[in-house]
Amino acid sequence: MKSMKDYSNSINPNWCPGCGHFSVLRAIQIASAKLTIPNEELTIVTGIGCSGRLSGYINAYGFHGIHGRSLPIAQGIKLANKKLTVIAAGGDGDGFAIGLSHTLHAIRRDINITYIVLNNQVYGLTKGHTSPLSGRGFITKSTPYGSTEPPIQPGILALANGATFLAQGFSAFQDQLVDIIVKAIKHTGFSMVNVFSPCVTYNKVNTYQWFRDSLTNLDDITDYKNDDYQSSLNKLVETNGLCTGIIYNKAPDIGSYTNSNLQKPLVELDLKFNKEEFSNIMESFK
Image 1 (tube, helix red, strand yellow):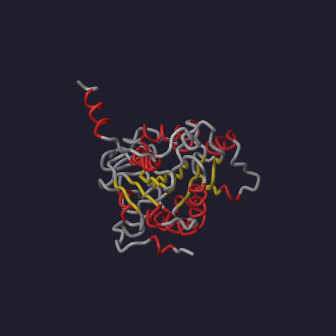
Image 2: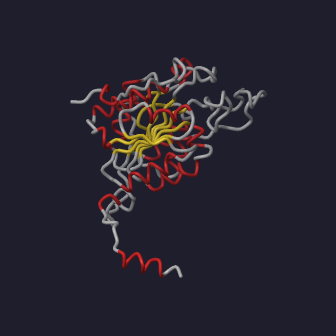
Image 3: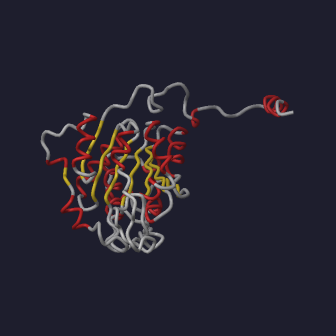
């Protein structure tokens, strides 16, 4: 049996007291323990931002990539070694601004990784300005008269691009978040988990209490079917994206990267070649 402590290291997180990211970190550790993932077979990939520090706080392999690039790195790791459990994590700016194109194509490819978005609707590391998920009218140092742009809807965007597993959690709903991450990791395909993770320092609008008052918990809806695409899309529209639970869950397509057996992963291939083969390769460039 493993416990959360098995996935903790000696590095103390330096997030602001009360930051929702503490809860996301703990949920990943508990979920990993529930699944008894060997530490050496767990890889956490992050980008830049407050969320980027997460890869350094877990007793597993960690890769701190550049801004918006956690997903291509995570996909490469998974394709090179399918035995690894790969989790990519990043903020809403990381995934829906500079990294938006990577997010869309990762969803389409449906590679068997889990993507956790630590969504606080603001750029916290750079002292507070609007992100693509900030609400219209959101006032920051860079938008003193309020943001004029409507926010991206990450759930609708994911479904429109063929997501096979979509869920949303809330930092204050720890038990539900753990359950979501467990099921996301077990899903054979690309799993996207959007977590409402309040920034207590720079976002005084989307607070813990605001989310408690605004969120609809899908687990409380007994007749909700998360395997029906139209129902999932309708629920996102009805709640304006403010819902938690597993929104959509279906088996990945046969033709996805996940189920492809056309080639062994790199770690199982013999990549050595002799001097003659090397000479032939070099000769071809003349």
